[in-house]
Image (cartoon, rainbow, N blue to C red):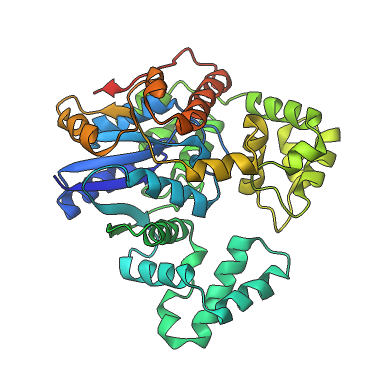
Amino acid sequence: MKTTAIICEYNPMTNGHLKHLQLAREQTAADTILCVMSGSFVQRGDAAVLDKYIRAEIAVKTGADIVIELPTIYAISPADNFAYGAIKTISAFPNVEYLSFGSECGDAELLTLTAKLLSNEPDEFKALIQERLKTGVSFPKARAEALDLYADLNPEYAPIKGILNSPNNVLGVAYICAILKQGLNIKIHTIKREGGDYNDENGEVDLPSSSAVRKALSIEDYETVKKAVPPLVFDYIKDIKPRESALGDMILFKLKNISGYDLENLYDISGGIHNRLKIAATSANHITDLLEAAKTKKFTMARLKRICLYVLFDITKEDYEYCIQCPPYIQILALRSDRKDILSELSYTCKNVLTRYSDVGRVDKSLRYMVKLDFTAQGTLQIINKSNYYNKKMLLV
C-alpha cells in the first residue's frame, strides 16, 4: 500500500483544496490519502470555522481515506515547529511514500535545494540573517531577505531567489527541512498553486483561498463563499454568522490577570513582547485594540495571535520542550468505512493510536498532556462557535 500524506487545515476546504486532493492521488498513484489536519485552532492563531470532526468528515467525503489530527501544540506553532510536528506525526503512519502540498513555485527540486541550504546554513548566510535582523524585521522576513542576498552572491543558488517570499513555498520548505532533520525517506510532490495564495483575501480569483472564504463569511457574502467551496462545505457553513468576540474576551481576561513573570515564561515569548502585551492589555477593551497596540515589525500579527493562544491555554516554554521529546501519536478523526484495513495495519506499526478520547488511558503516559490539550481546544472552540456539536470519537464515513 502506497500512502501520500497531505498536511492541511481545511479552514474551510475550498475548491482549490479539492483539486489538490484529486491531483495528489492521481499523480502519485497513491492507494491511500492521509490527511494530517489541524484541529480546533490553526497556525495563524485563529479559531477554526468548523469543528475538527466536521472538517475531517468533509475531507473523507471529498477524497481522503483517513484524517488524523495534528496535535494542537504543533498546530498553533510557528511554521518551522508546525512542520516539525506534522512530519513527526506522519512518521508514525506506515508506508508514507510522498508528501504532497501546494506551492507558488510548483518545483520540488527548487524547494528541496532551498531546504538543504536552510538545514545546513553556511556562515556567510548566517551573517546575512543577522544583518537583516538588526534592521528590526521579523526572523522570517530577515531569512527571506538574506536568502535573496545569498543567491545574488552565489550563482548556484540564483534559481531559488525569492522563494521564501511566498507563504506556501515557506511552508513547503519547512516540511522538507523537517523530513531531512528526522531522516525520513519521503518523496516530495508539489502542485503549483492557482488563484489566490494562502494569505490572499480576494474572492474574485478562479480558486479563492480559505482566507478569502473566511473574509467573505465575516461580511456575510455567501455568494462568494458558495462559488469558492465544494457544495458539501457550503451546506455546513451557509448559515454561519460573523462570530462575536468570545475568543478575544477570553484572551483579554487572561492577559489582564496573568502576572508578568508567568507571561514571560510562555512559549515563543522573547524580545520583551510580554511587556508590550501587558501594557496593551491594561487599557484594551477589545482584542483588536490589544493586537494593534502590541504589533511591531519584529512581531507579526500572526505571531501575536499565536502567543495569545499560548496565554489562553497556559502553554509554557517547558511544555513545548516536553512535547517535542514525546513519541508521536495518531488521533484518528475520520476514516472511510471501507478502509478499516488501515486500522489493522496501524495496530502493528504504532502503539499510540486513539480513535476516541477515552483511549488516552491506553497510550504512552507521556502523551496525556498533549491529548488533553487537543480536547480542551475542541471544547473551547465549541464555546466560541456557540455550537452544540461536540464529538469525541472517530467518524466512519
